[in-house]
Image (tube, rainbow, N blue to C red):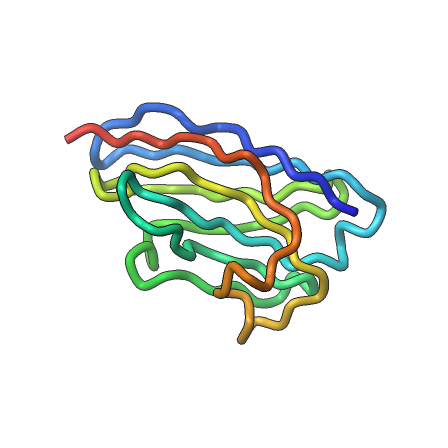
Length: 126
């Protein structure tokens, strides 16, 4: 079993940057594909970015490509989301999720992830 806890959310100005962190428990963190999803106010949860368990592939939603970067540090059981050039529409509750040995082609579907954090709020002012 894996527990994940997000941190790093907050208020940012449009054009600014934030870095989200996700700390995971468990001895087999390296076997988990990690992802970030977000839920904007009044909308459904959506995929943001993922990094596969092998660490050699990442995927991004079109809306964040070129602005967000996902990375992981297996020595710290952590995954990060560096967000730059923030837009007001990036405002959302951001969730970290873990799915065991998910391939890149399946990393964008929330149903494939068994473990979720409580979320961290990101608010981008106009």
